[in-house]
Image (cartoon, one colour):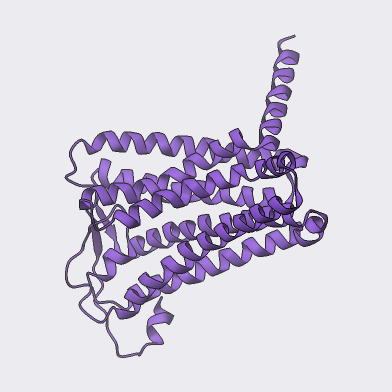
Length: 323
C-alpha cells in the first residue's frame, strides 16, 4: 500500500489509527446464543465443503469442467467462512474487539474477495448449464477444463484487484472521526465514513461494486435461465424438459441461497433496526457456505453416487480389517 500512497504524492501524510474497535454485535440481548449458532454453522461448513472437495478429487467421474467450478466454490466457501467466523467469535465471544489497522484491512480483503468469488462462481456454473442444455452437441468443445480454469482464474484476478483497489483507497483516508466500526467485521462502508478527508472515491466504489459483484451476476443468471426455459419449451417434450431442468436444480438452489437473503436484506436495510440489519448481514455471509455443500450432496445425482461409492468402499475396508 506504500506504493499506492506514494503515487498520490510524496508529501501527503495520512492519519491512520493504531487499531479499530469492532462493535457491531455488542450489546444485543442474548447474543451469546448466536455465537454458539455461528460456531455450529462454521463446523458444518468446514465438514461439508471439505467432503465435497474430497469427493471431486477422489472420484475420476467428477473431474469435469462443471465440477472444477463446484470444487472452487467449495474452496471459496471454506476459505471465506474460515476467514470470517473464527475472527468474529474471537472479537465478540472472547472480547477482543481491538484489531490493529493493518490486520483490519487484511480481514476486509479476505472477506470481500471470498464474497466476490461466491457470486462469480455461480455465474460460471450458470454458463456451464446454459451450454450443456442449449448446445449439448458443442458442450465438450465450448466448456473444456482449460476454459473453466481460465474463467475461474479471471474471476479470481478481477476480485483480488477490485478488493485491493478498495483497500488501497482506504489507506489514503485520515481516520479521525472515531475508531469504532459498527459492523461484525472490518466493513469498507463503515470504515470510510470514519474519515475526515475526502472519501468520495470510496463512496463511488461502494455504489459501483454492488452492481459489478451482485446485480450484474444476478441479471446474467436470470437471463441464462430464461433462455434455457425458452429453449426447452421450443425443442423438448415435457418429459425431456423436466429431465434437462433437473440438472439445474442444484445450481438454482445455490443461487437462491446466496441471492435471496441479500435481496431481502438490502431491500429492507433502511426499514429495520441497526442490530437486526447487522445480524441479517452476518447470516447472509455465513449461511450460504454452510448450505451449499448440503444442497449439492442432496440435489446432485453424481455427488450422491460418489458419496455412496466412497461409503461402500469404506465399509468393505472395515470388513476386511475386522476379519
